[in-house]
Image: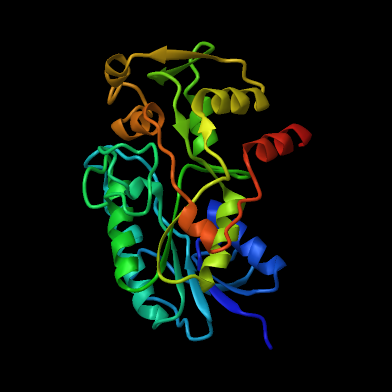
Length: 296
């Protein structure tokens, strides 16, 4: 039999590139949808901001990783781009898939931040409470995908080789040898990009529905941050600020937003029982990532 063919969006991006590499290594044929060719896969021209969608009839399944990320100021033109890419493009792809298995990479940012998140199952509310347009648009696309019978994966704080977001922001937040943090130490789920890539390919065969995807165990925030800083040769000390004091910096200091503070201030642990019952076994963790940095 010929190898299975997947149509993959975001193959030149952080998460999608890992999916493309893993799929190729496993013998999948990859149709890489995007504006430019990817390292792995056959290029299928596609612009997520345009109304046209390529013919997906050659694909056995669709894996949709492309997204417009970012925690933009309210009213920013980039918020409109997020709606077009995250919601409207997802709707067009779902229609073009024609009932083929469809895996949508969503985000834990779809979860309402107001209820307790010390153990977040897939039934946690997603309709309201989002702190930025990214969360709102991903939640809207998440609902579209579920309504269309797709598999929806919800990772949290994806990290790993080539990370363009988390670690660069962390390093940029150090001021005069200090990293200011809101509140006391908390427990947080993180997702290695390699684990997410593995889940994307497994999920092609899962029943429709939402699935949390994270590393095997949550991490203590402070220990994880210290380890990441040390791996990058940064000996910054952690400075714990009361929540109210930390909130004063929102809008006054670059990179400090309500969303950014929320991501660090409260425990957020995703329950992965549902994905594990489908055979997802995360094989990578933060120590693997940091160890690879040390050997580089």
